[in-house]
Length: 155
Image 1: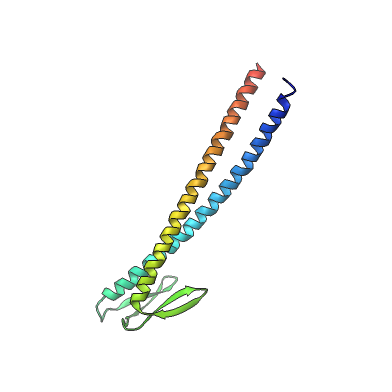
Image 2: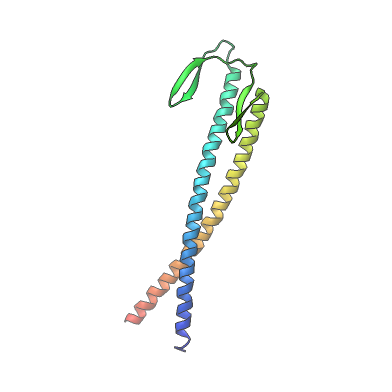
């Protein structure tokens, strides 16, 4: 029987090492997913602000003075001509002119796609987290069994 024990211990050692590598990979994957989630959430907030700002401009009286943000907490006073098309980025640094209703529709469509991407990402995060929990529990059980075995052998 003792001849079969060393190979079994070796397999367990190999299994533990594989599980530890897998656990580290899952944690790295989860970290990357969390970063993607943060980026998508920031993009969602930006698109939501753009839509709300455009709707707010459309509700403002014709002679209303607005503060237009330039960045770095810098603003200029101005007014908006509602008959002029809106400039909107379509990717790769390209900006096009579009009529307001089309821009509102585009922003709503983008928000919908971002929301779906966030939902899909959250599902992936849950799946990876579940794998992490299963592996962690298995490794904890192995560690407890090993500690219990060394206590019995030490007496």
